[in-house]
View 1: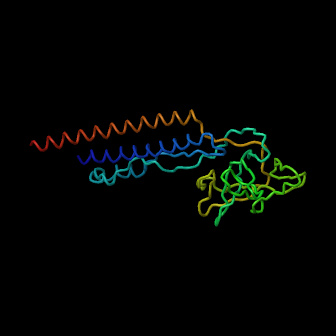
View 2: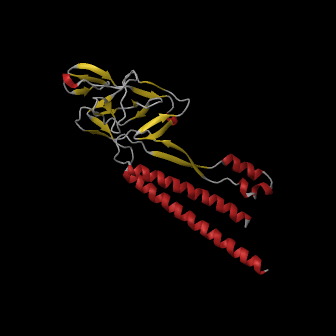
View 3: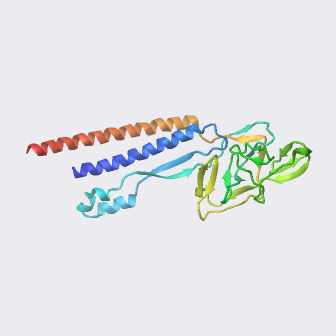
Length: 255
């Protein structure tokens, strides 16, 4: 019975991890059409060294369920692969070609980062994201445009011009450690404590273009089906172990 319980711990851990991955895939699919969205990825890990250490330990250590090592779903990260680019013809749309992130305002904190360049103007003629956050220039200040001189345009180097005159320059940065990026919602990311960002000297932008989501609908659907099947298989294993334990208990009670 004790060994069976150890196996249940292991299978249950794997099933819970698959449940978490299913939720992650579902969220990715829900954002397949979200501008600039970066899909979440994850991996199941097992401490191989710890497993080997137990094998070289005594029999009591190997049979102790509390010392068991089983697969865990962790090490989630943001997949920063570029999404497809779509020409929109809108003068305030812009996509980053290659590395880099736009900076947007974060009240009371360091600027947030985004790849979603579907910008617009608010009632104060400030450049904002689709979620209403103010876009920052290369000096870290909100961008306000005086439209009396004409319609704004964005150049491939991030220069915003109005009536042929430079009005602002988009703040585009690169990050030291992409693994330190954490999603905050609204298409934005923040850097974990200790990580930093620096201005990108020569950003390459594509005006009147937006970057789409990097989620593959077909690939995600295939992975969802595979993960769901593994989840169901683990459920059946748990059920089988439970039935075996029940029969053992009944047999012991009859003796």
